[in-house]
Every structure is written in C-alpha cells, then in structure tokens.
Image 1 (cartoon, one colour):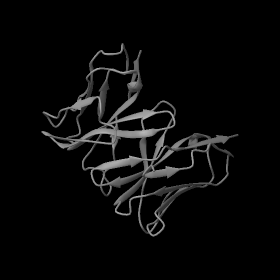
Image 2 (cartoon, chains in turn cyan, green):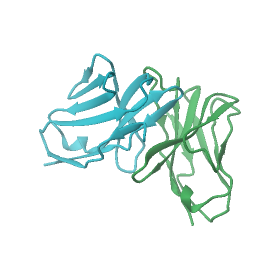
Image 3 (cartoon, rainbow over the protein chains, first blue to last red):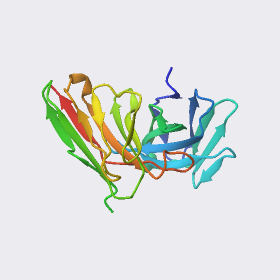
Image 4 (cartoon, rainbow over the protein chains, first blue to last red):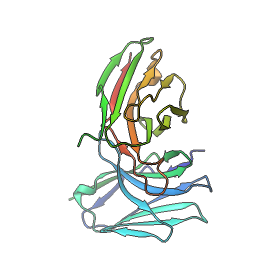
Length: 108
Length: 115
C-alpha cells in the first residue's frame, strides 16, 4: 500500500467553482504535511504547508485530521491558472513521500 | 538566483551505458535528494543526503549510486542503464529534511530515455 493516497481525478470544474481534494496517509508517525503544485512538464513547487489547526492562504484552505490520517485542500473561486496537478506530501523522518497527484482542469 | 540546477535536461542512452546526472544548489542547503517521476507512479525517492559525506537509500535505489563530497553537489550515477530507468529525474534540496516548514526546492528535471 502506498504511503500517501490521492484520487487521481481528473477534476474538471468551471471557473469560479469550489473544488476539494482529499488525501490519506498510512504512517501515523508522520510529522509534517504539505500540498505541492506541479504544472505540466514542470517541477513541483510548494503550494502550502498543512497545520493541525487548519490554515488558509487566500483562496486555498488546507485541513489536517490526524486521527483519521486525512488531509484536504479546498480551492475557492477557481481560476483558469489553477489548472495543474496537486500533490499531497507527507514527511516521515528524512523523506518526503509524495502522492501520485490529483489533476485539476478549470474551464472557462 | 540559480537555486537547484540539473544537467543535462535531456539524455538518450543505450542499454548498458552509464552516465551521471548532475545536481548543484547554491542555497547552502544541507538536505539534497533525487526523485524519479513516472506516469501513474508519482514521485519516488531514489537517494537522499542530510549533509556532506552522508547518503542514504530511498524507496527505489537499485541501479543508482550517489555521493556527496560537497554541500553544493549531489550527482546521481546510473551504473548500467536499463529501459526501466526511462523517467524524469528531479533533484531537490532543503534547509532541513522537509520537517516542519522545510520547503523542498526542485530542479527543472532531467528527461532520460534508455533504448
């Protein structure tokens, strides 16, 4: 079983929509959590860290549920430029484990 | 700012050939790592290093060697290339191992094809 599981999508949503991605992780000792964004044929880049109390960065909200080992990312008021693959990332010791990514396509 | 620099960006090899993917960072990061990304598989950790002279294996180390003689450089060596090593390779570095808010900075990737 992969340590970090995500629904691969694709999620096709219209501009202005709200979309949510979910992620589960298997290692209960995981210490820190992130969402990365990867554009087509580009390198991944950090979107936001995920804190236990939940955190927001503009239109993006991340939530962590340690008891259920579950992470979520909510994108409000989707823009065309949000089209990308979103990677759920979990730190376990000296490695960052990446989910396979969820593909988002925002359409006009 | 250069950040993380990988070379070459593209490479075609024949089965059995060896080569080295170069990675250099100018941010004085202690932690460096190599990932490979394959369709449907996501990013998988090959090797990592928490400082000069220290390396360790990740999830998929077979067929690859690394060394870390300086803080700046972390080359990845393919010993005898196989078609299964056709992939996109990313080098990444961080101030820490990614704990807490240790953001990973990635190079632009090296696209390797083994015939």
